Length: 289
Image 1 (cartoon, rainbow, N blue to C red):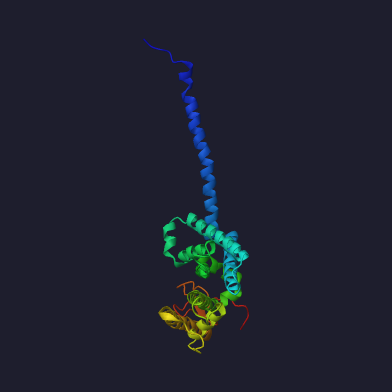
Image 2 (cartoon, helix red, strand yellow):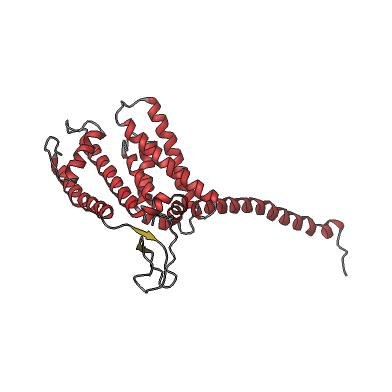
């Protein structure tokens, strides 16, 4: 004996199918929006469009403003408005940090870079100034990493003739300035609370420069074993960077032009042939000769 399906049984699969399709359709726009946002952010951080280059210039400007703020507030008493600005800086840096992790296909690799840990310390310093007071100066490591990215360097070569002509010198100056800033910050943070000779960043900078140049007037010295160890590091690494800068300033200037045969990038200013393979070059010149 067979039974005839009721009307409810016949029509019941259709609503279920519609519910499944509706659920998928509800998820798809959300996933699509998330993917599109992620792609836009990835293009801003790693792309080659004009918008991406402008975005990285904004990041560089923000880093410079952050560093200037850190130096400037070291000369003033700790006030409420400074703490509010610290929180704003911390939120912006945290947002940038999370965005970079989100768009990175391998976010764990970010933690292999010292600049990533410097960002984490800077975030804690800005959002919890009592715990990490003053450690925001490590933010300059992020600036150094940004200046060394291929995209930004390539854009600077395109936008600035001065940068193209003096790239090695500018790189040596940046490395030396970053070293000075980091070591000055370390000297200040480890000594100002126990060493009466170091009351602000200028005192710490003065000691760092006199140590780096081996002048050593002796009017300011670092106390304790940690202070002596810091002075040794300044003398060893600082002198190396200083000599590197002198080397780039004194050696003959070269132009950047890829040889069509061997790919050699650096040539003499008046070079006609590549010194590596002998290929005739056609280096663009602005009429200096």
